[in-house]
Structure formats: structure tokens, C-alpha cells
Image 1 (cartoon, rainbow over the protein chains, first blue to last red):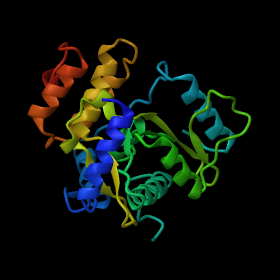
Image 2 (cartoon, each protein chain N blue to C red):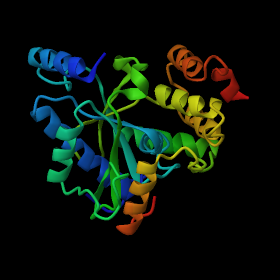
Image 3 (cartoon, each protein chain N blue to C red):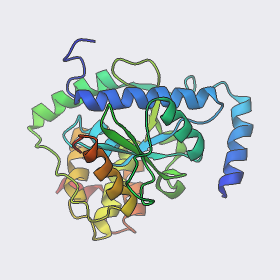
Image 4 (spheres, one colour):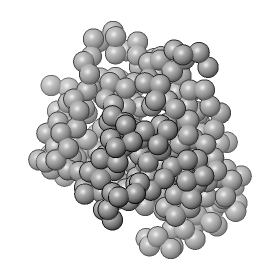
Length: 74
Length: 188
């Protein structure tokens, strides 16, 4: 499906609906976070390993450098 | 919001998702779909910041419109980074957003599994890849042989989400790993 076709399909669909809020359940980040933190503590799960970064595109490497230049840590 | 109200997530991660939700709401006000969060930031969301990231991968068919909205919310195209840089950086939040694709995982995800989230301290909503598709994504990268570290991410995500939809998860892992892996591989 081309991007242009997909955009047109979305525009037609969007004209028939009022938005996505009423169509599906909303996850509360606060509730999910509390539940996951309890689960993590219960299982004594370690920190997840960081991405090694071998698959990063040139654009991604440039973005991470720009974040570093702005004083951020990723 | 009190200082510890973002716990167990990193405060800067919560701040980023609040902005992402407001940008998403602005897209809806333009009659466009909310962009979808994928990749490492989704892994941070589903792991309660056990995995941290400073760059946010986004899927949307409406990249120019999204970038307009991101700029309205203070994001900039960094100067001097060269033409390789497609993402935008927020100087205040010290993080970056990048549109990585028009569709999530080449359109292989079930649209009904895209989740809608209300961030901590915000009423605007954002969309995110499901934990099932995220685990499958990690396993696909692991199976490709170029990202061995993704296996532990997938395994721990499954441990954190025992209520994941297992039928869907099994199918998606098989699809992404070309049939080489399934849920049982993550439980060993």
C-alpha cells in the first residue's frame, strides 16, 4: 500500500470517526508502572542490558551525538 | 506534581512522554492519527526504566506534519550535525525524536494491538507498540544475528508481562524470527 493511498484511506476513516479515545481502552502509565515495579521487585529482575548499538543507522548516530551535544545522556 | 510522582520511571522519561502525548493530541486536532512509539523508548516504557534511552523512535505516515508539531513544542533540527541527521532534538529535555518508518514493523502488527496510553501527570494520550510486538521485534533482531543483546531484553520483558497475549506473541515471534524462535525459547 503506497503512502499516498494510506493517507487517503486514513482521511476517509477520520472523517467518519471522532477520534481514537472512545474506541479502545486507555492504559494508565501510573497504574502500569506501579504494577510492573512490584513485579520487578518480586522477581528481583536485573537492569535490562543496554543496546550494543551495532545496528544504528548514520542518522541515529547523528541524533545521539546531537543529544550528547545538548548535554543529554542516552 | 510532587518530585517523586514519576516513580518508578525516570522523571525525564515521563516528561518526554508528556510532551509526546501533547504533540499526539495536536496531530489528532489536525485530523491526523497519533504517531506510534516503538523501539528503545517502548522498551523503557514496558520495563519501567530498567532499560533507559534518550532517543525516541516514532512511526507515522505524516512526518512533515509531525515535525511541524514537534517544532511548535520546542524541538529543533540541530545545526552542524550534517545531512545524515533526520531527527529533532529538544534542548530543554535533552532528548531526540526520530521518525523511523511510516508503518510499525513493516505493517505486520495487528492494528488492534497498538496501545493507547495516558502518561503520568497528563491527560493527553499517545500510542505505543504492544509489548507482544515489542518482544517479537527484539527476537527478530536477535534472530538476525546482528543484535545478540536483544534476547535478554525480550526475556525480561516477558517475565515482567506474564499476562501478555501468548497466542499473538507466539505468532509474532515466529514471524519476526522467520520461524526460528517461539515463546518457549524465552522461558529456558
